[in-house]
Image (tube, rainbow, N blue to C red; front, side, top):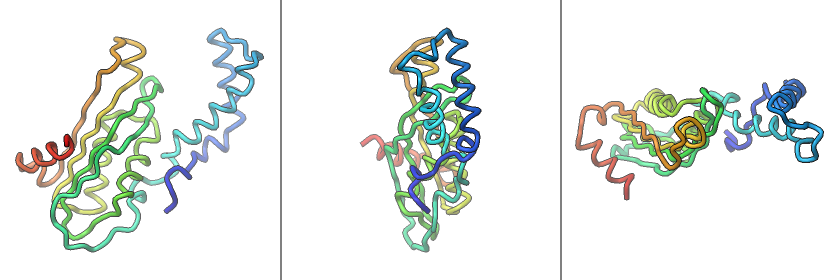
Length: 197
């Protein structure tokens, strides 16, 4: 599987002319002069951006984990501080932050970079933070069948910081637990302490 950054949203590519047309119309409807020098290429730039930021629609996130390996390691594995960028499905405004993933294998492991690919595949689409958190945990559980999975997602949402209540700097934290992490408070505490270090 190639680098996630190689994926583009094919639907955007196929509909380039229509998207550019509608972006231009939106600019007109908000009162802009679309013949102004700074806006001449904006519809094309926005369309190219959509190809990239919505690239997650082009792949099945389960495939992001790629080939898994038989391995007898049965202790906690954590990849933390995975930076993500997504778009809120309610306002189409950006939100971004960090994802922390921990799992206890039961005979199958994934390459560490594949966890970052999974985050990209899930987040590069219209989303809500809660769903990103749940989808990562569910896919890890489905593909690897680990003894437990824990996912913590931190996010700063421009729909909350730059509009509405206008509270910049506020962060949302969501968490999903599966298996041993759901049942064992000590396992949860160990994960949380390790991601804070």
